[in-house]
Image (tube, rainbow, N blue to C red; front, side):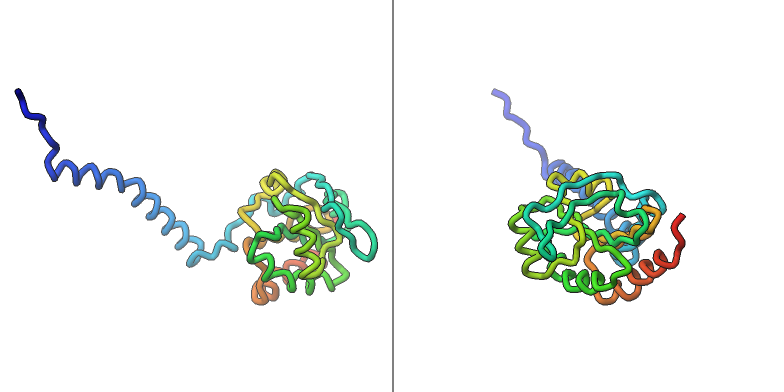
Length: 200
């Protein structure tokens, strides 16, 4: 009867090391990516849509949402023409969306612009409760239950905010939540720039 051979300790160790090679490569690439972004500042990721027309996706309104006693309409790309719009992608389940909500209300106080919402993968009751709790800055809210519109807008994750010029083209994209700092240093200057540009 012949004895079966068992792999030696060195062979087993080599197999374990080989198993970790893909993970090590992934971590190295992720680290390089973060360094290239500037210490992981994802808001600096460029958007391929800058300078291009906003996606022509019509979205249904958030059912039951009213403002000043009237139903709030959904998202209609035709409404971008002739006005500077700030489009915010949000959801009630998104923690940073709760934090940025007061800053969106502050933006909405500027009557020179339209603040529009895309409500992503949310339950209507939860979305309405969110706006009831924080206040509704939106003149229009389109619902995106399956994230299809968000993909067309090139959204990485919620929240994200876009500035759309009077010609219907995207002029700026902010990835991540609006903060006091990026509101003053990034978002407001881009809005002013869009307001100063004549419609084409």
